[in-house]
Amino acid sequence: MGPVKKAAAICYRRKDTSIEILLVRAHGGGWIFPKGSIEPGEKAWKAAQREAFEEAGVTGQILHKRLTTFLHFKQSSRNTGTEYHVAAFLLLVMSMQSPEEKERQPTWFSPEDAERAIIQFRQFKYAEEYKRVIRLALAGLTGRHP
Image (cartoon, rainbow, N blue to C red; front, side, top):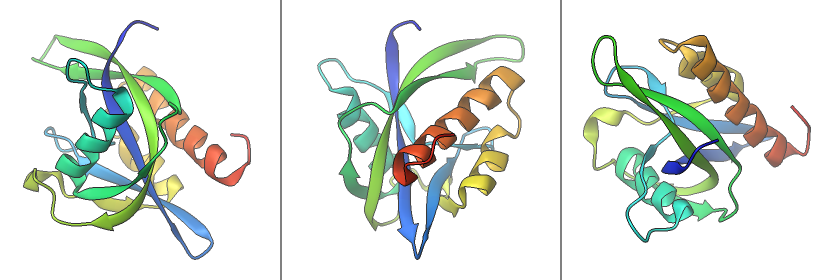
């Protein structure tokens, strides 16, 4: 993989005996993990934590160890775009408020529903990347391999 330029928070909470994943609306209308650029001199986990607050209005305990790196494609026009390498970090949500970016609509999903929601409107290669991240997160949280 190439250099990491973005960071994402894989936000989760435990509800009874299950785990829920928090997704936010992308500008194009689909669902994504809160993510954004890593500022110069900023640690990737800190960028993920910042993006989780800005886009989802959440704070909590973030693991400083990267869960994984995944590919994300951001379309800039009808036929062009940029592929990014995104560092993903688990963040246990402890509190939630209205996000700074109001259009993001943070929403909780079961892991299965999160997979279905996040792959909509994505090319197969990137849909598989997002599913892989959710499965790795779930494996890390439950101790079961994907």
